[in-house]
Length: 117
Image (cartoon, rainbow, N blue to C red):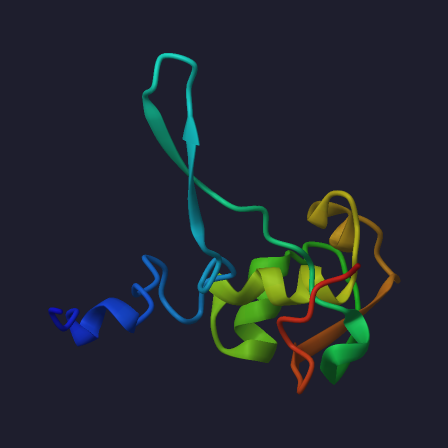
């Protein structure tokens, strides 16, 4: 009996950095009828909004964009998706399309990563 490589039990590192909305989403392979394998990223489910920690409420003004709001409130324009997650909409651009709309700025909470469903 041979001992397996102890590193085989470790999860593979994510190809996405920890701040990415895709960090931790496992990759998968689709096998085409001809046997060719095509890698893809599994669907990312939105976190439950009750698992988020509210940071602020923002009243949308003319010229607001999610990346600009993320930079202001979260310190990084790349984190715009966190605002979109906290304010579900079919198209994230809808969130800043109407001046006067109230949107929640939230951080991941204890329930972060919990999927709807």
